[in-house]
Image (tube, rainbow, N blue to C red; front, side, top):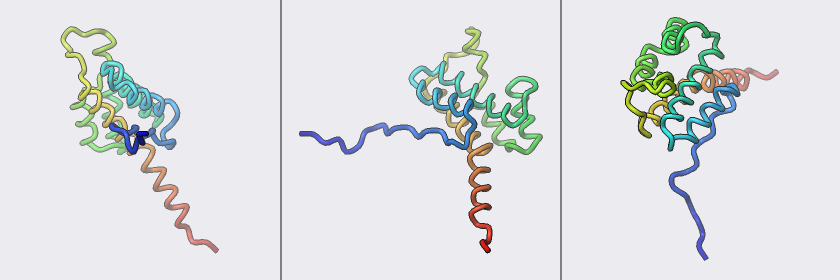
Length: 140
């Protein structure tokens, strides 16, 4: 008889419930599709897009909204730079741009890491702060 003690790789964490439903589902699917990098990158970009829209940034293209998020102090300049470096442009795969290289698994992982970090900054950490304030209120 064999007993399984641990499996590798481990089960990926579920995106936090603090993340609104639509971007959370995109993040789940981006994680689940890491084996299909083109789909995963597109889903990560959709998650970023949905998160920015949740914060009221609905005008313009994705990268313009990322810069709007910097201007509104929702994210740092470094986060915007990271967004550009991971190449989140969902149009490359959708339009089969001949100039764009096909995403790799590593590229998909980088995009997902960025999207999850953005979710932490925009939703998870502010929720933790709010709970911390409520929990630390003096009780009569």
